[in-house]
Image 1 (spheres, rainbow, N blue to C red):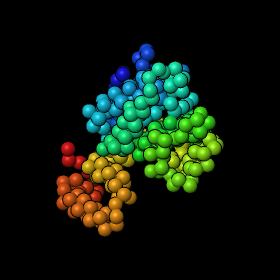
Image 2: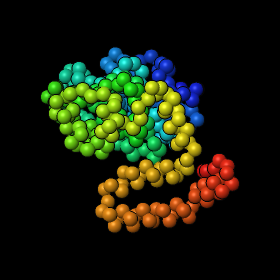
Image 3: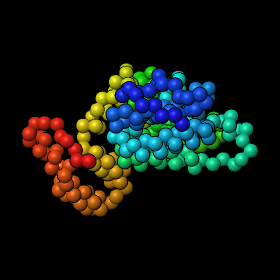
Image 4: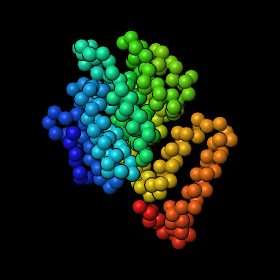
Length: 267
């Protein structure tokens, strides 16, 4: 794994060290992780997944305000490395891929997929595991699993947390392609962009301006409240609201609002 520390822009023009498939740069409290396995369209090979996990390790140690997952080449991610799977003498083990998706979903800071190229099969799961998904308007998507004799099993977990099943049924059952506008309509992506870098930079600026504690708690409630019975949800959120309003971040935020200045968040 290579570590780059320079400009505060996305790093699709940064070339990882020879032989490595994933690079990371941490600038201005944003960790940008770049997939660069262009020979197989950033497929989820064992090496790529291992390096991606190592980059997430480094990002977590740095405690950034946001993690951006992006790519080099014409494809964000083509899903499983089918050649590697076919040539392997060992039984399939999807636990490392599951772990990466869980970590993107469970990271205390927002995770952002920055997508400029095609997304296929398992790549949709990797993308959907991120909190925010910024895609170029020309991007296309295909869930190809049924065409190769498998089901979109693991990736259904992050996808179906974003998309009602009825809206993704045709794509999953028929491998019918769909475009970025349709992905936005069904809730699979959050932002359509003519300039992905510019949009992601604006999102990261907005995250940095907010209270780190408030962002972390908001990310957590987005995941937990829909799973709770109504009264349990009200009880949990009342306790959270009282705790936050009585804490130092709210005190600073309200003082800054009253004094018409930018807040200085407690560390």
